[in-house]
Image (cartoon, rainbow, N blue to C red; front, top):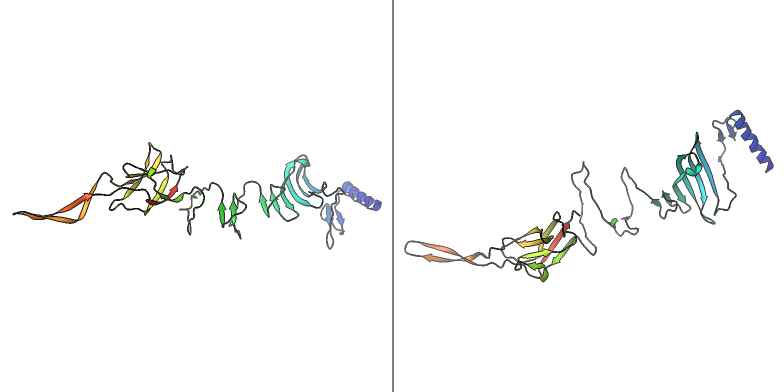
Amino acid sequence: MKKHLILLAVIITCATSYSQNVGIGTNLPIAKLHVSGDDSLVIVESTNPLSTGSSRLYFKTGSFYTGSISAIGTGLNTARVGISTFAGLNFNSLQERLSILDNGYVGIGNIAPAFKLDVNGETHVGGNFYADGNVGIGTVSPAAKLEVKGTTRLVQDVAASAVEIDGKIKVTGGTKAAFIMTVAAEDLSNSNHTITINHPFCNSDPNALLFITARELDLGFAGYIVQYNVSLSRWQIVTDGYNIDYTFSQGNIDVCDSDFCGSILMVHPRLNKFKAGDKFNILIITTN
């Protein structure tokens, strides 16, 4: 051991005194420290217990510490490798950016990653991203190729013309933007000419878009329109022209006198009203 210390002291003294390169395993070192051999093995060892010990290699330029590579003990038989950066006058200013655990988990901005890649902070992918499995955003157990838990926003790019979906859209959850509305008696007003829609996604939102198709409905020859009632802050389905209470019959009555003979179309009251039990398919796109 004493011989080794003496040899190390001689090497350091020579390197310091003559500013020469030091070669280990080579007579022609081309760097301040040049190690050459079949395996070029270099060991940096800490004699402290693994649970509290660490081995570090620091990099310094001028007066500034700029980086380090560390092997840090985290338990009786566990450790991690950390790569640190941040230019500072003291090596304690260095911040660990990349951490690799014994199990291969990698953390970026996270010294205790819980996944193969665990990133704490914003992430940007500049090219294609491929995932062989399900992807979860806001959930660690996605049940579909892409499962998002929380608010989702799709923003059209300047160069893009539209958001394209190749396939169907399925809406699930307790409160849905796409649903079947079965009209109840309390939904009807204006002598059953109006249905009021009460839904948190479109209430108080005159800019919402509602796509409505009749599922089970019988209005004879009449149709309906969808409009926003400002005084109620609700969207409504209203029979089209509900003040017109008569329609033409398919039959006629012949009327003749001595000079003229013609036909008069029969008219009868129009049953142009909604009723409880009518069903509509509704899709709400909200701006809120």
